[in-house]
Image 1: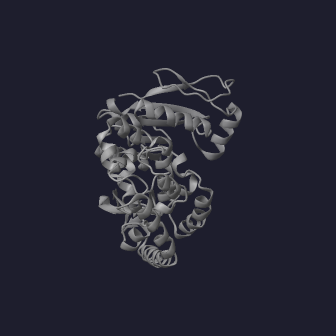
Image 2: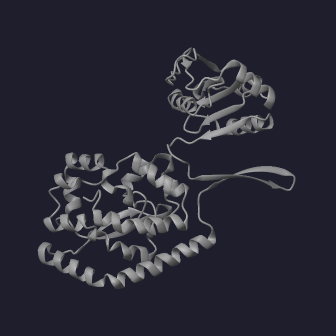
Image 3: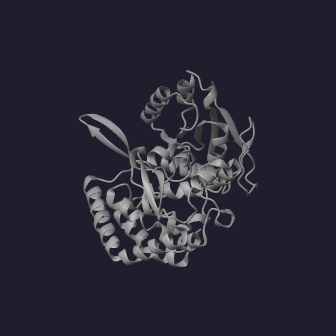
Amino acid sequence: MRPERVQETSAAQAEPRVALSRYDAVRPSRPTSSWRRRLVAWLTDTPVREKRVIVGSKKRARTVSESLVRAGRANRGELWFVDAGQAGPQLQDRLRTAAPEEVYFDLGAELDEQQMTRIGADLLMDGAAVHFMFSQEGPPPVRAATTSIGRHGVVSVHAVADGTLARIVRRTIDIVGASLLLVLLAPVFAAVALVVRWRMGRPVFYVQQRVGRGGRHFALYKFRSMVAGADAMLRASPEAYERYRASNFKMPADGDDRLTPVGRMLRRASLDELPQLWNVLRGDMSLVGPRAVVPDEVTQYGDYGRMLLRVRPGLTGLWQVSGRSTISYPERARLDLRYLAGRTLRKDLQILLRTLPAVVRQRGAI
């Protein structure tokens, strides 16, 4: 099959726009003059008009093409597109004949994995740059490196994870930090427990199933802020449960009849979250990490859901210090993925230092 060419229009069009119908166009945002393009090509020994090919779905190709134009990477070349649903056995020969400088494979499209691997290896041998695009937005939580095994060249892709020393240090910090906070905040725990018992009765604690590292479910502890049997009330009302899902799996405070006056006060001050220090001490959670999600919520993270479950969820995290309930999907998912992609002990410390001001400002608390 022959790739469908996306032709360039006049350089007079200043605004980038890409439409990936059969013979539509790319409008360069910063057109390069002919003499300048030829001079650069002569000095660098590269083609005058570089070829870039996107192999994937039309919807995904549209957004990638627009990004390439905005970034100025499609200004002095040709942009081609191959529909992954129609890519047959001839794709490998067609791509090699076209001799593109760059090929983008959409991992979210229906691509044959063995064919994609074989084609990618051949293109690399031909000197082309090969890019693999994840379906989720934001930086992918993986790292790539080129190494060798004997005389064989190897391209290795690793899921982002801490080294052994970093895991030991992080767990030590969790144990020491949670233990100290439990001791120092013991009077606060006692005062909150007495208020909840006095004004709301039993039980004092609210226990909810969350998904932890490796997909293991664990019991997350909070001070109770709602009426007894709140979960059963939510499940019994399809309308209320739909609002709960639409509001990022947390009912808005102004529309939740289950929330008590004392519970509103506890949530605004984030005092209801304090018992999660016990979860940190037990190893269910970490002081800093992605948000602990309910089982139904994992699907909202798309293909990266399993990647997020490689680490312990956090008592606090990038989402919590960036606005909490004022941030909804898909931005919440992107924040967790951004944290995971650049996770370091130094950044964890920065998030911990930002947590107290965020709690004091009560930003996004409900």
